[in-house]
Each structure stands twice: as structure tokens, then as C-alpha cells.
Amino acid sequence: MTRVVAGDIGGTKTRLAIAEVADTHVDVEREISYPSSDFATFEALLTDFLTGMQTPDFAAFGIAGPVHARAVRTTNLPWYIEADVLQQRFGFRVCTLLNDLEATACGLPALSAADLLTLQQGEPGALGNSAVIAAGTGLGEAGLFWDGQVHHPYATEGGHGSFSPQTELEIALLRHLQLRHAHVSWERVVSGMGLLDLHDFLRSYRKSAVPRWLAEEMQSGDAAAAISGAASAGTDDVCIETMNCFVRLYGAEAGNLALKTMSRGGMYVGGGIAPKILPLLQGGQFLEAFLNKGRMRHLLEAMPVRVILNDRAALYGPALRAAGAALNV
Image 1: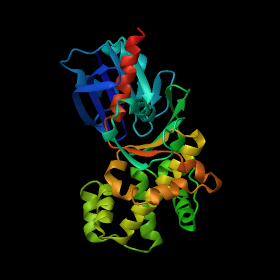
Image 2: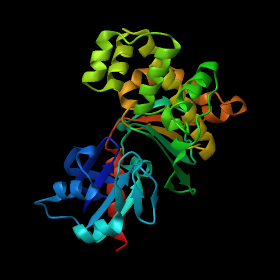
Image 3: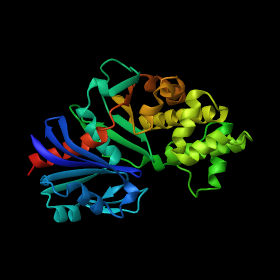
């Protein structure tokens, strides 16, 4: 057993854990979730977590942003994180930084069958590259290269690729977003913030005012959850359309990623949003958009598509990576 510090650093929240790792089994000993914006730096947050504890020798952190030269500037937070600085300040023997989706990809071996929901079976015994897509505060994407024996996770910033509309409605959405953003990426439409912009656009496009009860819910709490809740309850037509559009766009970009990575081994849908909208993901619109790639439809039909239900996958990955580093010291 190897005792490690693992972290999942996101734009909205940061989760830290102390875990015991044996092979691909991760036993979380202690876990705390923090609002990321409550701390000026990640070092301050990590200090709070580790105060009064015996610090493990090995640590790894999944971070929403591109990691380069053992450092990362977070995409949706004003943090700059350096592995060497953390290693020196906290006394880690080895500290590793990973992109957050690479971290989720690394965590897949720790998941059980109960942690996954199958949307499409694909071909029996499918083998090959795999990929992970995850909508949350932003949109993350990662690949897993299959070398014939094992998968090798790698990071991408595919969520920042340019949004490509396919219908008249989506073209109107693009034009609407171009008035707000210099570059309209897939993250601008398939994410928590994208959901809000999609709702605003449809209100304007349909010339439908926000009902007072919904406006109050959106102002008093999680606006995205209020929109999703109204759609689930069937109490507002624009909210229903918003969620249906969101699911179709999510499926379309998942299909794009699957083709670009040739994910014969499967597509995994992670992140915080997917488990909250399972009935919509199972309703057929996600898969139809995923498969709607013309002559490549048959290729996509052969790929398994699974939703990650266990939100600890993004913690399991750094824990496994930290334990792996311990074996090499």
C-alpha cells in the first residue's frame, strides 16, 4: 500500500484526498471539497488541507488547464501552479501535475462496472484507443492510446477547438455567441457556462421572457440547475429546448473526439453534468448526434459509449499516478 495526496482542481471546486493505493485499488482515507474561488492560490488551499497531518511523500494533482514543464496556469481560475514549488514547500518526494481529463483517464482502471452506465454497447470485446469527454465548469477532453497491451492516457485541449454548427438554429447560436466572444469554442456551448448562454440565446430566439419563478430560482441558487430542473419537470418550454440542444451538442462533440482519436476501445462521458442528466443522455438524442457523421456512422456504432457515474474518477487518477511514481523512486 502506498499513501498519497491526490487532488482534482477545477474552476468551481477543488477536491483533495489522502488515499491508500494498492495496484489499481484506491481507498480514500480523507477527502475535503473546497470552493476554488475562496483561495487566492492553490498553495494556500493545500496548506489548509494538510495542516496538522503527516504529509505523504507522493502527490499528484489533476488540474483544469494545460500542463507544461511541470507547471500550469489554470484556465478558469487565477492560479499558477508549479510542481517543483509544491514539492519543495510541502516536502513531497515526488509531485506530479496532470491535466484534469488526463487524470480522469488515468482513473478508469480503478472503476468497477457499477461505476459506469452504458449508452451504447459497441462491438463485443472492442479494443483500441479510447477517449474521455467531460462537461463541467468547462469542457475537457483526453485520449488513451492503446499500444496493444495497455492504455496510455494523454491530455488535449480539444474543448477549445472551434464550435462547428450544423443546423440553422446552431448557426444562429454561433452568431449570437460571436457578439460576446472573440473565439467561440465547443466549451462555450458544452459546459455549465455554455448552458446558461444557450438558454439566454433561446430566450431571445424564441422571444420568450424568463418566467418570474424561474428568474428567482436562477438568482437564488445554481442557475444551470434551475434550468435543468425546469426542463425535467416539464414546466418551461425554453428550458426543455435548452437541455435538448445541450445534449445534442454534447453528443456531436463526443462523436468528433471519437473520430479524431479513433476510439475503437470506447468513449467515456465524465464530468459533473452527465450524472445529473442521465435520462436525457439515455433518451437517444446524445447518441444520434454522436453517430451522425455521414459515412463514418458505422465506425461510431462499433464504439462502446459509457457514462462515468463515480465522480471520484478524477481523484483516483492522480492517486494512481502518485503511487506509480513511488514505484520508480
